[in-house]
Image (cartoon, rainbow, N blue to C red; front, side, top):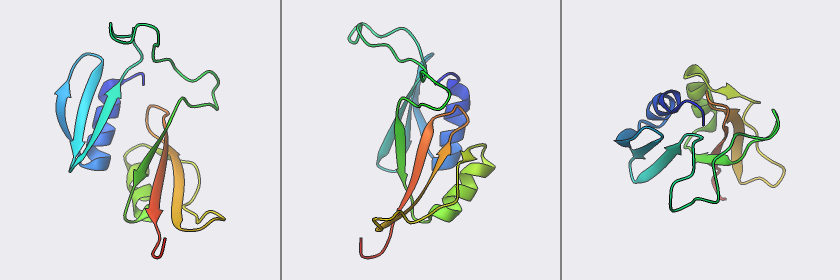
Length: 121
């Protein structure tokens, strides 16, 4: 993550989250019973000196996938697009069924999956 302010703004609006802690390189957000920890690319902390956060190695690679369980994938995709996310394709049901999902990049380029469990899954 390169811009913590942009990410905090996006996730507070997209998830209705509340900022519980905000430091120079870190923010803790809460949405209901869920917590989202956001950290920027920076020097590793003393208790993790051997592993640093780093950006993706190529323009088409991402270091992680954040899956957000949603009630309505279509409306969630529209909502995050309106907040500045780039939706990569329309919501679909994958060949194995059981869910409706789509993928997007948040304003900082992180890969998101919006996932809606379908009835009977």
